[in-house]
Length: 443
Picture (tube, rainbow, N blue to C red):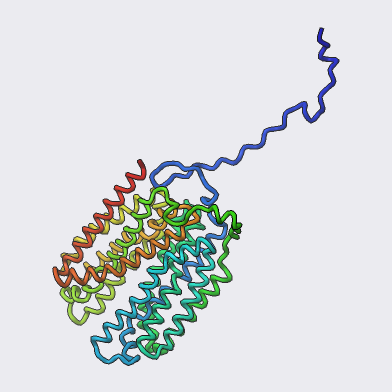
């Protein structure tokens, strides 16, 4: 017969009662993606704890470097003439070459800087860009001939890229739920630099001289370099061992399970700049048909700046809206609105009508840059986000080059109204393309 259980020795105290259950982990709500599905949160969703301070520095640095790239627009032909070019046609030709040189090298090197940012840190790339731009802008003020001017403008594009680097840093460090808003704020700073640059360039040379204007710009960018070095903070990146590097997956496009969203954003970024720049070659001639000849230059300046001012007003608001309703929804809506606003621009009869329509178009375009970067950020691994955003920057520079070339060709051979209507067709096609890609990725 079994012994009574009372005769059995009592178990030790540490095994008598089960261990108390661990407290439940705090529940983290699933994060909806752009198509409305819920994804499991990842550690990168929360962003960096320094993202707000870094955003402020990036806005200031992007503003100053964009001012430095664009301030020479009003006096560039005068500077070319000072450097020894006498023929009026040659002055115009060299001015165009010198201005476009910076954007040419910037477009070529943006993916490289983005890839290096993924590998060695985003702050390091911003330090390189701000110091490089400060040195290059100061050296431009020491140019002795037009060849040196073009070479130094090429160098500025090669060493620069602060605005694109800031986009990478902000996109990767900001919580995903705030990415659109933060990139909208940054986009407003970039657009403000595009507006302020020519205004500063038109005001300073009569006061301090052309060469001193370049020195002042270099000094201002050097302040951005100091702020970047001292104030931007980036989490320490884990050091990879040689063994880990040997088994690391391939980088770049090979890491993307679905390339369609990124390709769609590259096309959208190019269309954005194309829509902005396509009227540049024809705007003065077009305005001359609408206003008195004495007011042509003034009204043309207002038309050129109206779209940028509209984008400054709307970028952060549309970015915040995109965080709430979906970035792709805002992209499709903005492209559609832009296409609709281009049609009446072809048939205006007064200068103020064109200014108002360009401002409204700027309101629509302001939502594209932050949303393009946000969609890329949400659809690529964190380790290659810089590389992909670098390709996005190159696509935008491509639109900045193609826009004026296409606008000048179409305006000269078909007619100025055809520039607006042709751009309308491209923007409507972009909206349909984005809608089709969004539907495919949802499936």
